[in-house]
View: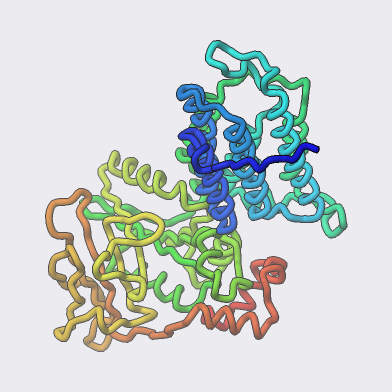
Length: 486
């Protein structure tokens, strides 16, 4: 009787350079899954794109070094399963496609992907090859193409702020068959992967990177039309011969409260002379990360927070513009405004507006989402004694010169209500760096703690994310009236 002998298999010694490149593809897929759980879909897409490049080059390296092996073949399929099948499914689930019917379709997509990879491993040698050993065509839709298409669509949706629109389109709501319309194309992609009749003659090295770059390039240059429509509603007159400030006040605003309003309205003080204030609610993924350990049930989407801020009566609509899109078009928008106004011989500069608790004296210009050469600090809602010296002047910021006091402003009972301090950056820089400090003689010192506020609202009204989403803007304003001070 024959006795099977033990076969020793030293995996680490059998791994070749091409195999490590293949494992890098799997690593990108795992990191994309982690990114999707934090709502960072653009990052997840970038990782899947990088994984695709590793998937392309492992075959090139293997043929160049003559390192093709059965183990490399299996590693390649398993890595593709992680990066282009499982990671896109995790992205879609995190995006919000997770009803029972959604999950059934996503499961179908995964099973089709697994079946295609298995068929490829068995039949790839039957496909005609060119002189370099590369297949002349693909039988069925390759899994990297399907995975990249999914991650690109989701990333673009987050980029342009279309997430809420896509998620809101549901068929058979409230029934066992409730399904998001956005998940239906997954059936087509799954069927395409296992199709025998579909034969694609595409050079993935050019087609996928080129199409992805074109899509994202167009998104980077695109400014949604509703943003341009909203700016026409502002009653702003630019003045020649001086710098016209447009102040950006960004924050979570989850929920907005009296402290936010105090800081916002201080940005419209005549002492500062800002032309307008732009309110910038934080991105959903940024807010979820911030709330991870701090009452995450009280979550308002970026679109809901923008609508809520626009509806607060105390905020002047002719001077304040609520940015109701995602962060990403903001930078090209600012650059465009500066160029257009320069053409008309006006000087416009954008500045961040923050409370003193968000100011770092060592890095005073650092702020989300983009660092700007101007920073405005207001102590209207909170006073930080450490920001001032014994002689009453603000503490010197790192990299900036001494403060000078502006004489602009009215006096109340012989005393100025607000003192504006101005400093400039040291050394040559373009554009010139400036700091502004609005020092109120009598700060409100509301010192509202947003964490405690969310906790109190949850306990008082039995709130969670689902019940909050059922409330319309008017109901939310009524709920928040005590904390808004309106």
